[in-house]
Amino acid sequence: MNSEQLSGLGLEPMVTTSELADYLRVDVQAIYDLRCHDRGPKGVRVGRELRFRVSDVKSWLDAMREPDPQSVIVAGEL
Image (cartoon, rainbow, N blue to C red; front, top):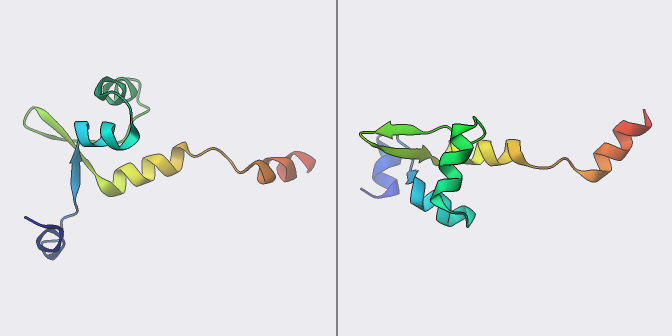
């Protein structure tokens, strides 16, 4: 099924643990370790495999973003 068919069903694309690790350029074990310590993205178990919604990965990455150095300086001056 392509992404147009998925969106027509109201579904969004999902990636596997291996695909996520490749995208982040880390070992697959790093993804499992992050999840084990409640620091990884939310996943969906499909049988014995994990899948990750693209929107959940984006939200997780946004939450991991470092603060803007300029906003830290301004906040420290208050």
